Image (cartoon, rainbow, N blue to C red; front, side):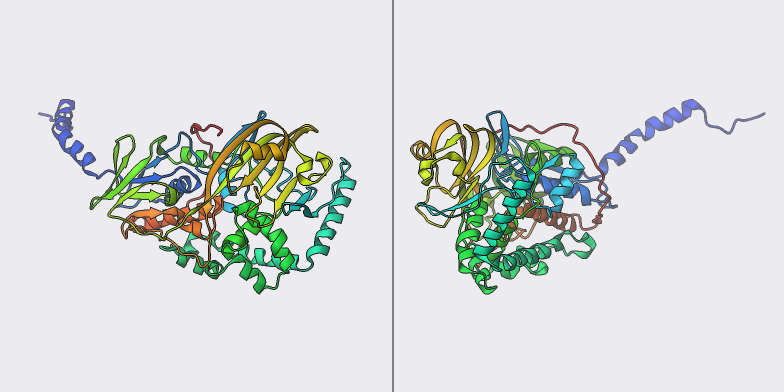
Length: 505
């Protein structure tokens, strides 16, 4: 009798039903991927998430990428990147400008399909008019000619360049060389990951790039050391450091060099607001975003961290990242962490749509007031700078004012002859720099609690935050995911599927 060797269909079904519990057990035995919790949704926090996704490569022990949660105490993402609307126009209210060699920011813009643009004319234009105000008079002013002819504008630009050179001499070239040398050293942070160490401390990171010594003495001492003229330091350099960091030439040398680099040409920003970089990176990094949820405590419980929020929620994370300055937040750590004491420099940004009062500056007409009014170091001066953001017509101009203290209505009424709209924002903008600088570690507890903003004591910009975040991401992958290889996969263009909530201030 013939016997069919093939098992019957009913037998296969029976076999599958018997093995199903075992199959299910095997599929669920694999441990869930670890969770990385990031506190802060600015450029630092969003960059950590981006680079964790970018560099992670599966391994037998860790086949799946980590879950990432980002906590933001505000209703919006972006941190110190924000916009303000004045007269139907949108302007940067926080971090405003990017350098042409800020390669992480450039890469973000390309990947996210963001449109870049030059900043307002008063911030990066050879034809801008500049005045240096000492509280009583303009000690220096460039020429102003109201002409739309390019040839006339070019001639005026050449004349002003000659006048600036005549006033400050070859010290301008020395200052340029000092800035260029610092930028060249900073470019080492863009070398391929295979050629760059992973740094556990800011000190190591700065020493490797040849930048550490700049943090050990003041900008003034650095510039005196290369024989810059006292007049250039007292006037132009002081104006720049007051505009960019709200501080004098007694800031540390590296912060000062970064400040000077931010006054050069080729500066840019993201059309519609720099905050879109953070939003896009978060959207593209498969992140669980918790808006309007402030973390009030981080406790290490042996194998994981417990984060507790003001909403009375608790979260367990194998890795915790603080990507916001600890100077003015009330996060309780258990066990306690120790970092050098530091205070933030507050910059009060006041936006006014109206018209300046020429009499305040000892002038007869508004047209005589420079588009950018910088100031010398004097504690009695009520503002650090005033710049034109947009001129709609002769009687309708939007200005931005930076000051160390709030601008009262009475003070504004003396500076302006008319005010149609006024917006005030108080930023805990950057560290108060002093030399020699002391740095918090990237690893706060010797385990897996990381601090991106430790690098801010060297210099505080959008790009330095991205550079620090990239190092922290590599640090996490090398220490926690030790068997997972760090792989620099090819970056491809992408577009975020959905926009993260954001509103103007």
